[in-house]
Length: 102
Image (cartoon, rainbow, N blue to C red; front, side, top):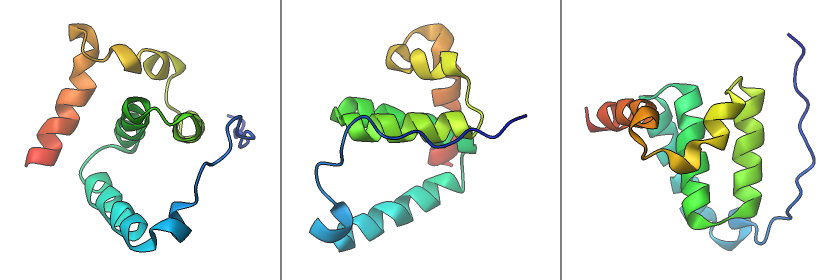
């Protein structure tokens, strides 16, 4: 399988959190590490992408979509993520929820 190359971002980064709030950013990365230790990598991408959709950050949506695709996530799952509450799409998120609550 051919490796996917990183795509140039369409949106520009509005603020650099590493400079604006370095401690908060460091804690966010630590939290991501804790969550990532308990859920599948592809599922972690879906969680981050869904959070970005809820936050409405176009830059983050693009970044997390690119990362997920490069890690082998299916395009269909990414496109349908916004409709995850439909019963047929809930299985992955229910697994994530269960893993985080253990």
